Every structure is written in C-alpha cells, then in structure tokens.
Image (tube, rainbow, N blue to C red; front, side, top):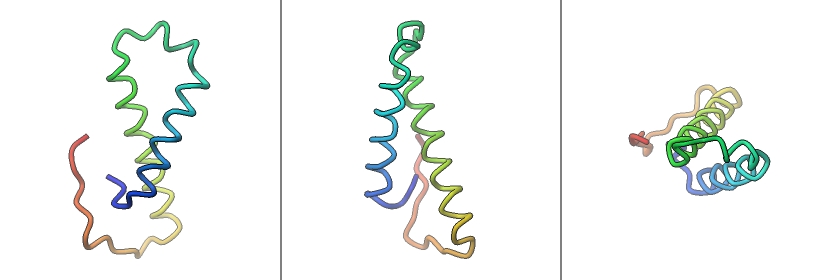
Amino acid sequence: MLCDSFEAEDAVQNLYLRLWERKEELKNIVATEAYCRKLLKNICIDRWQAMRMHDPYKREANCRILPV
C-alpha cells in the first residue's frame, strides 16, 4: 500500500506503538486482528496522504495497491 518497504516497516512500528499506548482499550476489543488491520490501514492511508501532500506530482510507476 505504501510502495516502499521502509515506509511499510515504519507503519508497522507505528502500529505497535499505538497498540502499546492503547493496551488498556485492547481488553475490550473482541476482534483484535480486525482492529489491528483497520488501525494499520489507517496509518498507511495517513502516511500515503502525507507523502502526496509533500509531493503531489510524484508518480508511483512501480507501485501496485494491493488489498489489505
């Protein structure tokens, strides 16, 4: 989704950080995997939008968006 392995690694690290910060809330979540997928998807979208805002004309020719 991010087309850059370093950005993807940072997104996963950001996911772990957010999960750690919200560890008390996780006790109330029934579908933990779905929660993590949704949170990671939102992190990726935020990063992608930030990259596009920084360089709106950047072409991602070798980028394929895969389903999450």
